Length: 245
Image 1 (tube, helix red, strand yellow):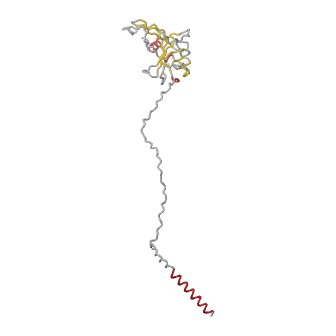
Image 2 (cartoon, one colour; image 1 turned 30 degrees about the vertical axis):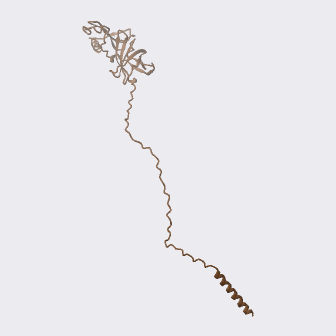
Image 3 (cartoon, one colour; image 1 turned 180 degrees about the horizontal axis):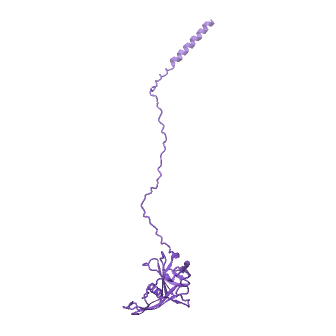
């Protein structure tokens, strides 16, 4: 009896399941998914590259510039100065001509304590033409100084010796009447050739020509009281030295 009940329950369960299956609509068939046979390739990743930023640069343009050559004017060699001419002027005292290498301005001179006003002429390089009221001492060491023409500042000071035997005196230009047509004609001179106690000869002369007083020579020291006179041979030598006829 129990076996029959068991089978009855099973049959009922089966019938119920069938009924439910009949009432349930069939599930839609699954749509097949197309499977791509292409293997996906990895996409290329852009590699950052360094970008050079150009910085503007200054380009130097070489131009040929004329090179200026600086020429410096050499300074006068005052230490090499020497007197090459000494002559007496009837007006203005004494004139001296000096050689000063590279001199380029009218430097004034103090010679043996005597002031000389000087001039400079570009036509005669290395020359100073100076005028003073007195004759500088001869044949002894004296002081020589050069003064700036504008400021009077002493530019150089040293020592010098004026050797009367080494100072030829050219014929002076004359005292007056420069326009006389007979200037230099019929020259006559009153002369004295003297010898100082130290044996140094000197000349004192006053000359005239057809126009009147012509020139003079005075190379003897002022402070000598006793003289010896030149012999004839020495007189001729001194006249030749000072251009005395």
